Length: 373
Image (cartoon, rainbow, N blue to C red):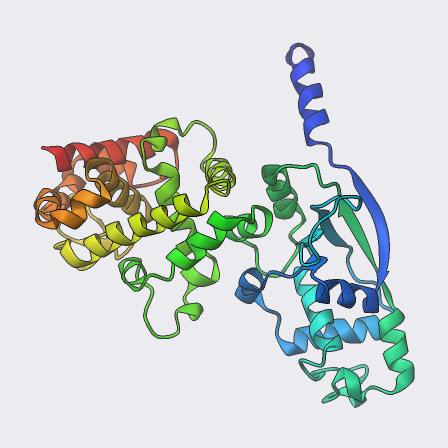
Protein backbone atom coordinates (compact mmCIF):
# COMPACT_ATOMS: atom_id res chain seq x y z
CA UNK A 1 0.00 0.00 0.00
CA UNK A 2 2.78 2.42 0.97
CA UNK A 3 4.68 1.60 -2.25
CA UNK A 4 1.53 2.24 -4.30
CA UNK A 5 0.98 5.60 -2.62
CA UNK A 6 4.59 6.59 -3.25
CA UNK A 7 4.45 5.61 -6.93
CA UNK A 8 1.22 7.61 -7.37
CA UNK A 9 2.46 10.65 -5.46
CA UNK A 10 2.61 12.94 -8.52
CA UNK A 11 -0.93 11.98 -9.55
CA UNK A 12 -2.23 12.54 -6.02
CA UNK A 13 -0.53 15.94 -5.79
CA UNK A 14 -1.91 17.00 -9.17
CA UNK A 15 -5.46 15.96 -8.26
CA UNK A 16 -5.21 17.67 -4.89
CA UNK A 17 -4.17 20.92 -6.59
CA UNK A 18 -6.89 20.67 -9.25
CA UNK A 19 -9.69 19.72 -6.86
CA UNK A 20 -8.84 22.04 -3.96
CA UNK A 21 -11.65 24.57 -3.63
CA UNK A 22 -10.95 28.16 -2.54
CA UNK A 23 -13.57 29.51 -0.17
CA UNK A 24 -14.35 32.69 1.76
CA UNK A 25 -16.60 32.99 4.82
CA UNK A 26 -19.01 35.94 4.74
CA UNK A 27 -22.14 37.01 6.61
CA UNK A 28 -25.15 38.75 5.06
CA UNK A 29 -28.15 40.21 6.82
CA UNK A 30 -31.49 39.04 5.46
CA UNK A 31 -32.41 42.44 4.04
CA UNK A 32 -29.21 42.42 1.93
CA UNK A 33 -29.80 38.86 0.75
CA UNK A 34 -33.32 39.70 -0.39
CA UNK A 35 -32.12 42.81 -2.25
CA UNK A 36 -29.41 40.76 -3.99
CA UNK A 37 -31.97 38.20 -5.08
CA UNK A 38 -34.20 41.01 -6.39
CA UNK A 39 -31.27 42.41 -8.38
CA UNK A 40 -30.52 38.88 -9.63
CA UNK A 41 -27.02 39.10 -8.22
CA UNK A 42 -27.95 35.86 -6.46
CA UNK A 43 -30.04 33.65 -8.72
CA UNK A 44 -32.82 31.44 -7.42
CA UNK A 45 -33.64 29.22 -10.38
CA UNK A 46 -37.42 28.69 -10.39
CA UNK A 47 -37.23 25.67 -12.72
CA UNK A 48 -34.94 23.95 -10.27
CA UNK A 49 -36.60 25.12 -7.07
CA UNK A 50 -40.10 24.17 -8.16
CA UNK A 51 -39.19 20.48 -7.98
CA UNK A 52 -38.75 20.39 -4.19
CA UNK A 53 -40.46 23.49 -2.81
CA UNK A 54 -40.78 23.55 0.98
CA UNK A 55 -44.26 23.68 2.44
CA UNK A 56 -45.43 26.91 4.10
CA UNK A 57 -45.20 25.19 7.48
CA UNK A 58 -41.56 24.15 6.96
CA UNK A 59 -40.71 27.65 5.74
CA UNK A 60 -42.52 29.14 8.75
CA UNK A 61 -40.41 27.11 11.17
CA UNK A 62 -37.27 28.51 9.53
CA UNK A 63 -38.56 32.08 9.95
CA UNK A 64 -39.36 31.30 13.59
CA UNK A 65 -35.79 30.03 14.10
CA UNK A 66 -34.41 33.23 12.58
CA UNK A 67 -36.58 35.41 14.82
CA UNK A 68 -35.44 33.43 17.89
CA UNK A 69 -31.78 33.67 16.75
CA UNK A 70 -31.47 29.90 16.53
CA UNK A 71 -28.44 29.00 14.36
CA UNK A 72 -29.20 27.66 10.87
CA UNK A 73 -26.83 25.78 8.55
CA UNK A 74 -24.32 27.67 6.40
CA UNK A 75 -25.46 28.64 2.90
CA UNK A 76 -22.96 27.79 0.14
CA UNK A 77 -22.72 30.16 -2.81
CA UNK A 78 -20.72 29.63 -5.98
CA UNK A 79 -19.11 32.88 -7.13
CA UNK A 80 -19.60 32.54 -10.87
CA UNK A 81 -18.48 36.05 -11.83
CA UNK A 82 -15.56 37.83 -10.19
CA UNK A 83 -16.47 41.05 -8.36
CA UNK A 84 -14.12 43.06 -10.58
CA UNK A 85 -15.61 41.81 -13.85
CA UNK A 86 -18.07 44.00 -15.73
CA UNK A 87 -21.39 42.30 -16.49
CA UNK A 88 -24.93 43.34 -17.29
CA UNK A 89 -27.18 44.32 -14.39
CA UNK A 90 -29.19 41.09 -14.70
CA UNK A 91 -26.17 38.75 -14.70
CA UNK A 92 -26.03 36.54 -11.62
CA UNK A 93 -22.70 36.70 -9.82
CA UNK A 94 -23.64 33.88 -7.44
CA UNK A 95 -25.55 30.62 -7.69
CA UNK A 96 -26.67 28.65 -4.67
CA UNK A 97 -24.91 25.32 -4.20
CA UNK A 98 -26.52 24.42 -0.87
CA UNK A 99 -29.30 26.34 0.89
CA UNK A 100 -31.69 26.95 -1.99
CA UNK A 101 -34.73 26.00 0.04
CA UNK A 102 -33.73 28.20 2.97
CA UNK A 103 -33.04 31.24 0.79
CA UNK A 104 -36.32 30.77 -1.07
CA UNK A 105 -38.26 30.57 2.20
CA UNK A 106 -36.54 33.74 3.50
CA UNK A 107 -37.15 35.63 0.26
CA UNK A 108 -40.78 34.55 -0.05
CA UNK A 109 -41.61 35.53 3.53
CA UNK A 110 -39.90 38.93 3.44
CA UNK A 111 -41.73 39.59 0.18
CA UNK A 112 -45.11 38.71 1.82
CA UNK A 113 -45.76 35.61 -0.28
CA UNK A 114 -47.08 33.44 2.58
CA UNK A 115 -48.29 33.79 6.19
CA UNK A 116 -46.68 31.94 9.07
CA UNK A 117 -48.38 28.68 10.05
CA UNK A 118 -47.82 25.71 12.31
CA UNK A 119 -45.63 27.61 14.81
CA UNK A 120 -45.56 26.31 18.36
CA UNK A 121 -43.09 28.53 20.26
CA UNK A 122 -44.37 31.77 18.67
CA UNK A 123 -47.88 30.49 18.00
CA UNK A 124 -49.23 34.05 18.38
CA UNK A 125 -47.63 34.84 14.98
CA UNK A 126 -49.56 32.17 13.07
CA UNK A 127 -51.43 33.80 10.20
CA UNK A 128 -49.03 36.78 10.09
CA UNK A 129 -47.39 37.98 6.90
CA UNK A 130 -44.11 39.90 7.15
CA UNK A 131 -46.00 43.17 6.78
CA UNK A 132 -48.13 42.24 9.82
CA UNK A 133 -45.20 41.80 12.22
CA UNK A 134 -44.62 44.44 14.90
CA UNK A 135 -41.74 46.83 14.01
CA UNK A 136 -39.28 45.29 16.47
CA UNK A 137 -39.70 41.85 14.89
CA UNK A 138 -39.35 43.31 11.38
CA UNK A 139 -36.04 44.88 12.45
CA UNK A 140 -34.92 41.71 14.18
CA UNK A 141 -35.62 39.65 11.08
CA UNK A 142 -34.14 42.04 8.52
CA UNK A 143 -30.98 42.58 10.59
CA UNK A 144 -30.51 38.89 11.36
CA UNK A 145 -27.36 37.61 9.65
CA UNK A 146 -26.74 34.20 8.15
CA UNK A 147 -23.38 32.67 7.47
CA UNK A 148 -22.48 32.03 3.86
CA UNK A 149 -19.47 30.36 2.28
CA UNK A 150 -18.47 31.70 -1.12
CA UNK A 151 -16.74 29.24 -3.41
CA UNK A 152 -14.23 30.54 -5.94
CA UNK A 153 -15.42 31.25 -9.49
CA UNK A 154 -12.64 29.28 -11.21
CA UNK A 155 -13.95 25.75 -10.54
CA UNK A 156 -15.43 23.84 -13.47
CA UNK A 157 -18.94 22.40 -13.70
CA UNK A 158 -17.97 18.86 -12.69
CA UNK A 159 -16.26 20.04 -9.50
CA UNK A 160 -19.29 22.20 -8.73
CA UNK A 161 -21.50 19.16 -9.33
CA UNK A 162 -19.39 17.14 -6.85
CA UNK A 163 -19.59 19.89 -4.23
CA UNK A 164 -23.36 20.19 -4.64
CA UNK A 165 -23.77 16.43 -4.27
CA UNK A 166 -21.61 16.26 -1.13
CA UNK A 167 -23.18 19.30 0.52
CA UNK A 168 -26.82 18.56 -0.29
CA UNK A 169 -28.38 18.05 3.13
CA UNK A 170 -32.05 18.42 2.28
CA UNK A 171 -34.68 15.93 3.37
CA UNK A 172 -35.08 14.85 -0.27
CA UNK A 173 -31.88 13.69 -1.94
CA UNK A 174 -31.29 15.46 -5.23
CA UNK A 175 -30.99 13.35 -8.37
CA UNK A 176 -28.13 13.69 -10.85
CA UNK A 177 -30.02 15.85 -13.38
CA UNK A 178 -31.25 18.19 -10.64
CA UNK A 179 -27.62 18.70 -9.66
CA UNK A 180 -26.60 19.33 -13.27
CA UNK A 181 -29.47 21.78 -13.65
CA UNK A 182 -28.04 23.80 -10.77
CA UNK A 183 -24.35 23.47 -11.62
CA UNK A 184 -24.17 23.36 -15.44
CA UNK A 185 -26.60 26.04 -16.51
CA UNK A 186 -26.62 27.18 -20.10
CA UNK A 187 -28.70 27.41 -23.29
CA UNK A 188 -28.69 23.68 -24.02
CA UNK A 189 -29.70 22.89 -20.44
CA UNK A 190 -32.63 25.28 -20.87
CA UNK A 191 -33.51 23.68 -24.21
CA UNK A 192 -33.66 20.07 -22.97
CA UNK A 193 -36.06 21.13 -20.22
CA UNK A 194 -38.39 22.38 -22.96
CA UNK A 195 -37.85 19.29 -25.14
CA UNK A 196 -38.85 17.09 -22.22
CA UNK A 197 -42.33 18.67 -22.34
CA UNK A 198 -43.05 17.27 -25.83
CA UNK A 199 -46.42 15.47 -25.45
CA UNK A 200 -45.36 12.45 -27.53
CA UNK A 201 -42.18 12.05 -25.48
CA UNK A 202 -44.10 12.27 -22.21
CA UNK A 203 -46.47 9.60 -23.47
CA UNK A 204 -43.56 7.32 -24.46
CA UNK A 205 -41.95 7.52 -21.03
CA UNK A 206 -45.26 7.01 -19.23
CA UNK A 207 -45.90 10.54 -17.93
CA UNK A 208 -49.67 11.22 -17.91
CA UNK A 209 -51.16 14.31 -19.56
CA UNK A 210 -53.02 15.39 -16.44
CA UNK A 211 -50.85 16.95 -13.72
CA UNK A 212 -47.45 15.91 -15.17
CA UNK A 213 -45.64 17.89 -12.46
CA UNK A 214 -46.82 15.38 -9.88
CA UNK A 215 -45.12 12.53 -11.75
CA UNK A 216 -41.91 11.30 -10.12
CA UNK A 217 -39.97 11.41 -13.41
CA UNK A 218 -40.75 15.12 -13.72
CA UNK A 219 -40.13 15.89 -10.04
CA UNK A 220 -36.71 14.21 -10.16
CA UNK A 221 -35.92 15.61 -13.65
CA UNK A 222 -35.49 12.08 -14.97
CA UNK A 223 -37.39 13.17 -18.09
CA UNK A 224 -34.82 15.90 -18.76
CA UNK A 225 -31.94 13.48 -18.15
CA UNK A 226 -33.38 11.15 -20.80
CA UNK A 227 -33.30 13.98 -23.35
CA UNK A 228 -29.68 14.71 -22.40
CA UNK A 229 -28.96 10.97 -22.60
CA UNK A 230 -30.28 10.90 -26.17
CA UNK A 231 -27.93 13.63 -27.37
CA UNK A 232 -24.97 12.47 -25.29
CA UNK A 233 -25.04 8.96 -26.81
CA UNK A 234 -26.06 9.61 -30.42
CA UNK A 235 -23.64 10.27 -33.30
CA UNK A 236 -21.56 7.31 -32.08
CA UNK A 237 -20.63 9.11 -28.87
CA UNK A 238 -21.84 6.02 -27.00
CA UNK A 239 -18.63 4.36 -28.25
CA UNK A 240 -16.62 6.96 -26.29
CA UNK A 241 -18.19 6.14 -22.93
CA UNK A 242 -15.12 5.35 -20.82
CA UNK A 243 -15.64 7.16 -17.53
CA UNK A 244 -18.62 6.90 -15.22
CA UNK A 245 -22.00 7.50 -16.84
CA UNK A 246 -22.93 10.42 -14.57
CA UNK A 247 -19.64 12.19 -15.28
CA UNK A 248 -20.06 11.47 -19.00
CA UNK A 249 -23.50 13.11 -19.08
CA UNK A 250 -22.25 16.12 -17.13
CA UNK A 251 -19.29 16.66 -19.46
CA UNK A 252 -21.58 16.35 -22.49
CA UNK A 253 -24.02 18.91 -21.06
CA UNK A 254 -21.15 21.36 -20.51
CA UNK A 255 -20.02 20.77 -24.10
CA UNK A 256 -23.52 21.15 -25.55
CA UNK A 257 -24.02 24.41 -23.66
CA UNK A 258 -21.40 25.85 -26.02
CA UNK A 259 -23.51 25.07 -29.09
CA UNK A 260 -24.86 27.96 -31.14
CA UNK A 261 -28.53 28.89 -31.11
CA UNK A 262 -28.89 27.36 -34.58
CA UNK A 263 -27.32 24.06 -33.45
CA UNK A 264 -29.66 23.86 -30.48
CA UNK A 265 -32.72 24.62 -32.63
CA UNK A 266 -31.67 21.88 -35.07
CA UNK A 267 -31.18 19.44 -32.18
CA UNK A 268 -34.67 20.22 -30.84
CA UNK A 269 -36.23 19.52 -34.26
CA UNK A 270 -34.29 16.23 -34.48
CA UNK A 271 -35.47 15.09 -31.07
CA UNK A 272 -39.06 15.95 -31.94
CA UNK A 273 -38.84 13.98 -35.21
CA UNK A 274 -37.51 10.81 -33.58
CA UNK A 275 -39.90 10.87 -30.63
CA UNK A 276 -42.95 11.54 -32.78
CA UNK A 277 -41.91 8.73 -35.11
CA UNK A 278 -41.57 6.20 -32.27
CA UNK A 279 -44.87 7.39 -30.79
CA UNK A 280 -46.76 7.14 -34.07
CA UNK A 281 -45.15 4.12 -35.77
CA UNK A 282 -43.86 1.69 -33.12
CA UNK A 283 -46.08 -1.39 -33.02
CA UNK A 284 -45.82 -1.61 -29.23
CA UNK A 285 -47.97 0.75 -27.14
CA UNK A 286 -45.01 1.08 -24.76
CA UNK A 287 -42.00 0.94 -27.11
CA UNK A 288 -39.44 1.53 -24.33
CA UNK A 289 -40.81 -1.32 -22.20
CA UNK A 290 -38.64 -4.18 -20.95
CA UNK A 291 -39.75 -7.76 -21.60
CA UNK A 292 -38.82 -11.11 -20.15
CA UNK A 293 -36.21 -13.07 -22.03
CA UNK A 294 -38.85 -15.12 -23.82
CA UNK A 295 -40.17 -11.82 -25.22
CA UNK A 296 -43.77 -12.44 -24.17
CA UNK A 297 -44.38 -10.84 -20.77
CA UNK A 298 -43.71 -7.18 -20.03
CA UNK A 299 -41.54 -6.55 -16.95
CA UNK A 300 -41.97 -2.76 -16.93
CA UNK A 301 -43.72 -0.21 -19.16
CA UNK A 302 -40.61 1.96 -19.36
CA UNK A 303 -36.92 1.15 -19.07
CA UNK A 304 -34.13 3.70 -19.63
CA UNK A 305 -31.77 1.08 -21.07
CA UNK A 306 -34.39 0.08 -23.65
CA UNK A 307 -34.86 3.78 -24.40
CA UNK A 308 -31.13 3.93 -25.20
CA UNK A 309 -31.36 0.96 -27.52
CA UNK A 310 -34.45 2.07 -29.44
CA UNK A 311 -33.88 5.84 -29.60
CA UNK A 312 -30.13 5.79 -30.24
CA UNK A 313 -30.39 2.76 -32.51
CA UNK A 314 -32.85 4.64 -34.70
CA UNK A 315 -30.74 7.81 -34.68
CA UNK A 316 -27.65 5.81 -35.70
CA UNK A 317 -29.50 4.05 -38.53
CA UNK A 318 -31.80 6.72 -39.95
CA UNK A 319 -31.29 10.47 -40.12
CA UNK A 320 -34.15 12.68 -38.99
CA UNK A 321 -34.61 13.76 -42.61
CA UNK A 322 -34.91 10.14 -43.77
CA UNK A 323 -37.54 9.45 -41.13
CA UNK A 324 -39.51 12.55 -42.10
CA UNK A 325 -39.38 11.69 -45.82
CA UNK A 326 -39.96 7.93 -45.57
CA UNK A 327 -41.23 6.88 -42.13
CA UNK A 328 -42.61 3.58 -43.47
CA UNK A 329 -39.13 2.22 -44.22
CA UNK A 330 -37.94 2.98 -40.68
CA UNK A 331 -41.16 1.53 -39.24
CA UNK A 332 -40.64 -1.69 -41.22
CA UNK A 333 -37.07 -1.98 -39.92
CA UNK A 334 -38.26 -1.44 -36.32
CA UNK A 335 -41.03 -4.03 -36.60
CA UNK A 336 -40.64 -7.03 -34.31
CA UNK A 337 -37.64 -5.68 -32.36
CA UNK A 338 -39.07 -7.25 -29.19
CA UNK A 339 -37.38 -10.45 -30.44
CA UNK A 340 -34.09 -8.92 -29.28
CA UNK A 341 -35.06 -9.69 -25.68
CA UNK A 342 -34.67 -13.40 -26.50
CA UNK A 343 -30.99 -12.72 -27.16
CA UNK A 344 -29.09 -13.37 -23.93
CA UNK A 345 -26.54 -10.63 -24.66
CA UNK A 346 -29.19 -7.98 -25.31
CA UNK A 347 -31.28 -8.99 -22.30
CA UNK A 348 -28.17 -8.79 -20.09
CA UNK A 349 -27.35 -5.34 -21.53
CA UNK A 350 -30.72 -3.95 -20.38
CA UNK A 351 -30.52 -5.58 -16.95
CA UNK A 352 -28.49 -5.03 -13.79
CA UNK A 353 -25.86 -2.26 -13.92
CA UNK A 354 -27.23 -0.85 -17.16
CA UNK A 355 -25.01 2.25 -17.21
CA UNK A 356 -21.85 0.19 -17.52
CA UNK A 357 -20.07 1.36 -20.68
CA UNK A 358 -19.84 -2.13 -22.21
CA UNK A 359 -23.58 -2.72 -21.71
CA UNK A 360 -24.48 0.64 -23.27
CA UNK A 361 -22.42 -0.20 -26.37
CA UNK A 362 -23.77 -3.76 -26.52
CA UNK A 363 -27.48 -2.87 -26.47
CA UNK A 364 -27.19 0.00 -28.97
CA UNK A 365 -25.03 -2.05 -31.34
CA UNK A 366 -27.55 -4.89 -31.13
CA UNK A 367 -30.41 -2.58 -32.08
CA UNK A 368 -28.42 -1.00 -34.91
CA UNK A 369 -27.65 -4.47 -36.30
CA UNK A 370 -31.35 -5.41 -36.06
CA UNK A 371 -32.48 -2.25 -37.86
CA UNK A 372 -29.90 -2.68 -40.63
CA UNK A 373 -30.62 -6.35 -41.41
